[in-house]
Amino acid sequence: MNDILHEIVEKNRPFLATRRRLRPFSELERAAKDLPPRPGFAAAFASPGIHVIAELKQASPSKGLIRAELPVAELARSLEAAGASALSVLTEPFYFRGSLENLETAAGNSRLPLLRKDFIFDPYQIAEARCAGASAVLLIAAMLEAGEFRRLCDCARGFGLEVLGEAHSEEELAIVREADLVGVNARDLHDFSTSLDRAAGLIASVKSSRPVIAESAVRCAEDIRRLRDAGACGMLIGETLMRAADPGAELGRLLSCF
Image (tube, rainbow, N blue to C red; front, side, top):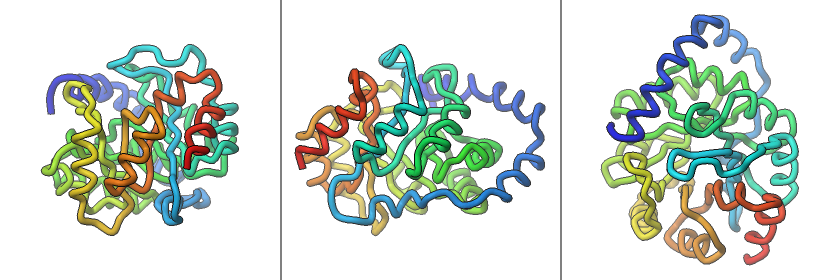
């Protein structure tokens, strides 16, 4: 792990340590396990058709500020009404301007399954996700050893959460095969470059009965068709929606092409 990905993870380690001091893991764990179940994440991709995970994201390291204001409650309701199958909520604060409060707000304003989108390396973050209303967490193979990935998968399932395992290479696909859903990211998290060619090739190579989700760089209906034809059953779309004046209307426009 190096470059931007390493920088993000190291920036978040002391922030996690502060949260742990304020609320011990044992307290968080008890609270998480007393909560009712959230809607299933993988089940949202079981039916035929185009399935979109609409992402609530205000900024990114590569693009800077994407959306000046992020009215999470309004966006969650409008994206659900427009046909999103699930929502992804960025909770990383330093580079993406996200927060757990945004995840909690989305959970309170949508019946859709929710993904905590973050750089997860500790069971504490998984317990936080459950308490904030997530149905699933993202685990990124580029920042986790295979053993760490398995342990965090087991931890997530212990909290009743599903796992979207993110890969960007053949080697990383081997790590994420135990996840509930396989995510193929068109973005290289080391330098944040994107390639739909590479993503489509990786998606076509996946040998798994689990849902395959195409992540990043989806800008138009033609991109969706291309990734669907390669074998993806879901598309995670963030920047394209968040740059639109009306993200719900933009999602409806994309879905109307199919």
